[in-house]
Length: 355
Image (cartoon, rainbow, N blue to C red; front, side, top):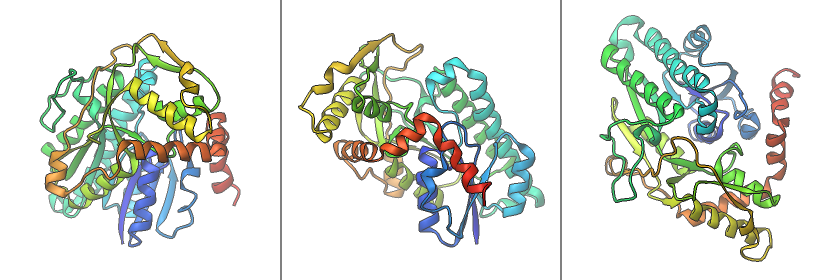
């Protein structure tokens, strides 16, 4: 049985990935390592927690002894590394936490993989893979034109978050070049969908619309982002992990650019409709606030390499994805309440300490 270590598997993207891997590959042993910080929620994985091929480990990727013990105990064949601090505003307030988790955590994982797989020389790397999931923000910012980020775009990070992710990408490539570690990196655009922690724009604004709270918009709302439905991202990760070329980078984007203000108006229109309100009822909630420091103007990914090599394309039109996403948050009010109140943190204690 092949053993796959997924880091950050209780988070937003990670929980979607773990669910797919556990259900799709019964011959895989999926080990989910998560520190369960504010954004990690085991309730996201209730439907697979009793599966025989699923194991949860509460732990920190910066705990090197723990990592070495996991590689040995579970005979890890592959790593899909998603654990990261990811909120730009938080990185501005506390850059050190982002450097510790995103840079040092990745370095510890790489070193533990090198030590375990390479114990018998480079032959031990055969059939192994370290897959690092990164972000388009490492590329910096684009103008409002027809240019796109490609796999050859020069790195130009502007926030502590993107700088920490850029550094982790460089370490992954360095371990490949220096030690021969088999690696793949993917850089994705903004994800949206169910189970996302409500500090991020889409779940935050859905919740605020429902509760008639202000919708804070940075600057004039003219910053442009490419949006990727989380299920499509997970399909891409699954495909790249199994069929991608080792040593390569793949960009994953939704071909789906929206100005922030236009996205917000679609959210308002969709949420008002599903809440049974008159069109435009929540327009008055839009509140313009001082722009974020170092706010990148535009992100846009060219995913043609992924499409041409592996046949991947986004499955949903944005409006359909937003309809499904708004519907999920409105129908899962209790989940949202537990997350915003912190109640979800009790679930780990109830599940893993009271048995």
